[in-house]
Length: 407
Ligand SMILES: *Cc1c(COP(=O)(O)O)cnc(C)c1O
Image (tube, rainbow, N blue to C red; front, side, top):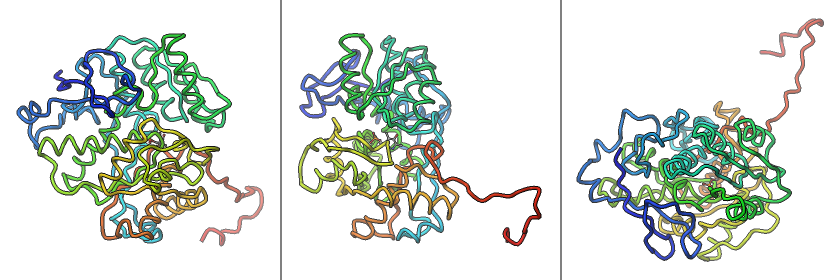
């Protein structure tokens, strides 16, 4: 299987690193980015045949992915996730039916888009012969790591904040990872993982601390291009925690542009966070290049409860280069919109996905986007993993039933 990887590059200093070695962060502690021989890809492939139709899900983008040994490709049945236009709910959040399109990532293995990143990270770890991986997680990354690591017959150790949704920690444990609850936030879990790299020798697959999760998340951008037939939307609204997805999609668009296949304007990249944890939004508003730590982070959208992101400067760069924005939404707003979209359109979003719809409403109000342009919202995980309103209406089968109530 051909790999076009030439080298890795420090995202801050552009220093080059050999691709055939195991890497974490760069020498100056910044994320490493994978670079490809785009000239050769351009020579070998074209805009019409760059996808391998025979391969499942995102593996079809092999030319722009790093795995070179097919037996190291760890797969659990990845799919191309559908684009679902909002209908009735679209007008109620200030848009037009058909123009607000949800990319439903909940259909991926382990029920979230973390599968994309961890599939690549675990595959590369397998290719390099690593045996034991560890991760700090708010839930979905841990579940994806657990599943892919087991599929690859590797050990996984997972640390979650002790208020991570119960279903997440249970699924992680059930899929074979050694799972611990920590009385702190994800960054506290991250410190334990870091210390263990020295003391236990496990490999740290934290967001952006190894180079390949971002390559997996990049496939969201590649997939959008293919699905939308090279006509990208006016904006992409993304619930931003560590920001891998936003950075990854932006990287995908740059690569396709450099190949000369993608032309025209790129989408505005709009990051959405919760008002209870909005370090990127604050840094964007204050014109900063880095985002200081957010104290007392809290939100129902646990996937974006990330008080400090190592890729903060890359997120801010992508937002600004794309003429995008960063918006904070209230938790009540998130839940109200989740309920609205489920009730009106039959589409159950996770709170993080619903946050993008709440962000859409703000972006319309603030005239950052227009209801005439197509906008893609990311529903990053299945809504089924989160608490939902209880059913309270009851029927007693032994009493006479008033059928009028059903009309
Ligand atoms: C991880 C996660 C996010 C944040 O994704 P990043 O790319 O790390 O910013 C958002 N929503 C859900 C459900 C997640 O699991």
